[in-house]
Image 1 (tube, one colour):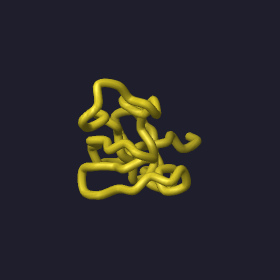
Image 2 (spheres, one colour):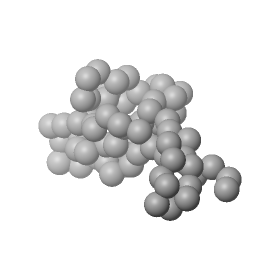
Image 3 (tube, helix red, strand yellow):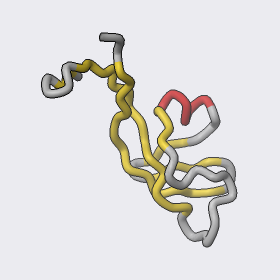
Image 4 (cartoon, one colour):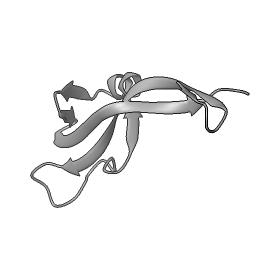
Length: 73
């Protein structure tokens, strides 16, 4: 992706952001608010199902999207 206004290019990677730990009043894995690429999610043993991720014994609501990494100028 190129942002002409900034004069920068970014590499885009599919990712999710963790919103809430479903059905729990705390996050036992400290993932809420974090962004993980789908490759990292798979490597850590998480399973993506639509707008949810199952990690260990906890279900999370997530938002599917992308994360960008700046490329050298």
